[in-house]
Length: 113
Length: 121
Image (cartoon, rainbow over all chains, first blue to last red; front, side):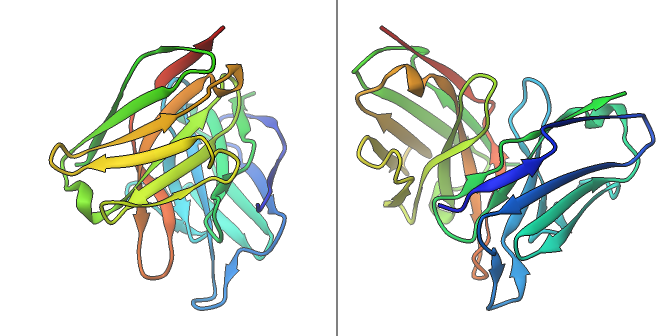
């Protein structure tokens, strides 16, 4: 199985400030056929199911605010919230879809400082 | 808009079988992959498996010997059976649509609200 490791486990950021979450995969998830990374990010607000934010490591899902961005390649990825809003308080997960079983990181909790 | 709703007993006895159903509305179940994902209390997400093409399945090897996912296209529903459950299977169980295309994307774009299943001794 591909192991996904996120850091930090939690972070507290002031409103309007930048939040950065890292995700590392135990092997490369770069798909040679299209040179894209098979990596997605989800947001899970308290008491809610996860919501897809980003796929192919950097493509925002329709309707996702542009303050959310994804970057990285190979084994190292980053989710950035450029200007934290109150509604962004949540746990964020990365997920690889390079090879089954699909696996998730352990989650990063984002709070307001 | 696709909507999913899980249903099933919230309490299951240890060593018995957990059975859950996901009802899909707003789209045909025949055209996509459909997955079950679980989340133990206070913990992360674990993909259980998917069904597609009205019957082909792929399961997480960690659960493969105990899992069956099936589909009823006439009711636009798919189901999960997990046998020989223990306390470690206590979790919120989500059903989700797994979006797939020819590039090999496999992401979960629509989710149910989740149903809590507790295994009691």
